Length: 450
Image (tube, rainbow, N blue to C red):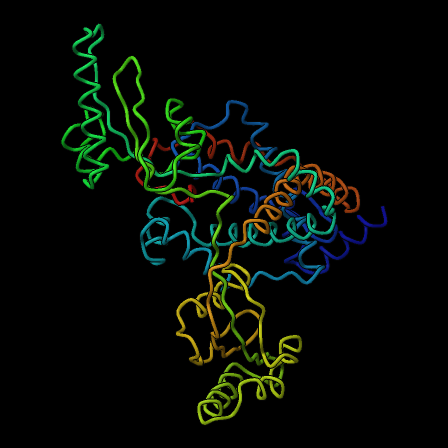
C-alpha cells in the first residue's frame, strides 16, 4: 500500500500528472503505460499485419493482452537499461534506419515517405527501433553475465558434435542434364551417355561449363549456364552429395545416372568451416574524448594539429602516448591488435577498410569520441580453429539463452511493482480491430521484413 499511495501522490502533484493517471492502464514502479500509448502500439502492430498481408488472430482479446504484456516487458527492460547507464543515442537509431532503407534500396527520406504513405507513424516506428536496440543490448549483457562456457565444454563440443559445422558449409554449383524419355530404349540410353561423356570431355579440354550447359543441357536452368547458385549442404540435390564431398573447387563430378537421365555438375566455389581465411588489419589510433570542456570542434582541431605534426615528421607513437585518451592503446603508442572486421564499431571499421596503408586519416567521430588512425598492415589469416571454437561457444550459448532470458524476465517482474489499474478499454479499440476497417492485403512494400 505504501508504494501505491506514494505513486498516486506523485502522479497527482500536478494537473498534467493527474491527466496521465486518468489515462493509465498499468503502473510499473514510478512509471505508467497510458491508454494513449497502448492505442498507439496496437495500431502500429495492426499496421504490421496489414502491410505484410497477414490476417489478424481470431482471438482478439488474447491478441490485445499479448500486446499489453509485451509493452510491460519492454518497459521493464528499458528501466533496466536506464538504471545501468545503457543509452541508445539518436545517431544509433539513424544508422539502423539507414541500414533498413539500404536493404529496401531506397534513401532514408524515401523510406520515411514510403512509411507515411502506407499509414505507418514514423515517430512510433523510430521509437520501436530505439526500444529494440536497447532491449537487444540489455539481453546481450544478461546472456554474457549469466552464461559462462568453459574451455572443456567447447572441447567436448568440438569432439562430439563438430558435424554440426557442416550444416553451414555452402557450395556454388552448376549442372548439366542429358535427359531420357520415360521408357528409354537401350540405344537412347547409350546415346545419352555418350553425349554427356562428350560434354565432360569438352570441359576437360578447356571449354566453359556455362557455355556447355547453354549448348547441351536439357535442364530448366540451361539458359543461365546451369547455375544452381549458392546452396547449403541441406539444399544440395541428394544425387550430388557423394561426389560433392570429394570435389575440389573448380572440378567436375563423375557422370550420375538417374531415371531422368545423366547429370554432371561443376563445383565453382565453396565456403567451408575447414578452410576459413579472414582478413585481419593492424592499425593504431589517437582518441580525444569529449567532456564538459572538450567540445566536438575542440577535439577535431586538436587531432588536426596532431595529424599535421605527424606529417611533419613527429612519431605517431610518441604523440599517442602523450595525447590519446585511450589509455590501453596509448601505452603501446596507439597500437591495436591484429583484428578482423567487426571487432570495432562500424565507423572505425569503415575507416580502416577505406584508408590506404601508412596514411593518416582525417579526424572522425564514433560513440567513444574523436579519432585519427593509421593502417599499418593487412593480412589473410587461417582462423579455422579460432572460428570453430567461436562457433561452438556461440552454439552452446544460444542453446541456453532463451531459458536464461525467460528466467531473468520473471525476476524483473517479481522485483518491480506492477499493477493493472483499469481494463484496457476494449470498447475504445474495437473500431481499430474491426475487420471492416482492416485494410486489404498489400505486399508491394514491407518495412517490417528487414
